[in-house]
Image (cartoon, rainbow, N blue to C red; front, side, top):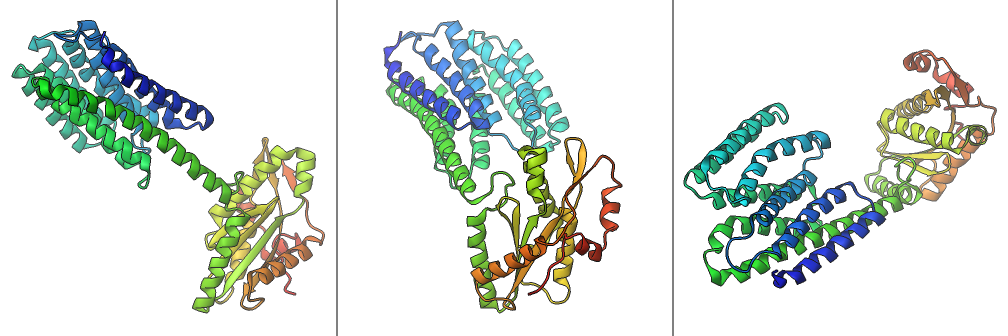
Length: 443
């Protein structure tokens, strides 16, 4: 047993445990694959400690080591893959392309040194690589790279350099993982720098390994570098998880968790900036406040879960159907607000109110039934109504509450409705005002 590997083995184990604890406290999808990849590196490190100090390693230990190298590389490549490709499809693509590599690594680990089975594995890998690249990824470039890679491996094997072929293929796998992590992780992430650097070092170690083993003077240095990059990658992954958690906390501090819209704090900052910009550019600005009618009755009769669904649907409809706003926010409860900068002349405000009314009164499917909600609106315009944020918000709020005190149509639940377009088209602006949906009184 080679006890010199034990300190590095313990360090890797501790880092994996830390990553596992972080994943339990802050669940993240990619962390599961990261842990699986590091688990394979841990198995490789454990098997390495049983290598004989001199001579060829035991064939069963050797096959475990080289196959764990490959499996870890494939898992990391999967974890760093493009988000544009479905996870299942990405897994199938990487798994199929790993079959030929797995066969070659296993043959080498078991100390087979006849070219025929290697060439068979290369042929399988070449065919699978070209077919999957064309039919699963629709990429001639990937197919061309597959042809070049497998033909290069065949030439190396033909010359009898089996070790070079295996470690060159591992170098390619880890280089692809480094490139994918470079593309996928956030640009300003410190963890990204550590991860990409670690994978680049790892790929370089695989590339130089067949040459280093012939020079005893460099073996110890290479061994330390080899263990360093594993710790570097583990630390990088811990940093990425902490950075993502911090980013999520910052997002939650400025957004409403239920609807995903900016919250009051974020809205006030944006409103101040928009108002200052309108002052400098001598342009107009509109503030619109919207409050759902009868929302308390929805919560009391149908439950808060239905109320939350109504808020989410109204927010989604406003976000998708009203295009002219600069900021849409939820201030709390059933109150929403909009900011519109550079307000054009003419009847732009009337068109906006119609768009808002159409979005709010769009039928919502709740527990198999269709519900229509109404809203009261109030607005204020800078500089016509007021010149500061507090006064503008007060005026818009007063107009909204003045309208809200009038009789209005309560939320309705229907089991059958005509098509959405017909329902909206059948309501003229005057009928909406009569229903208390979009009428606004200037005071």
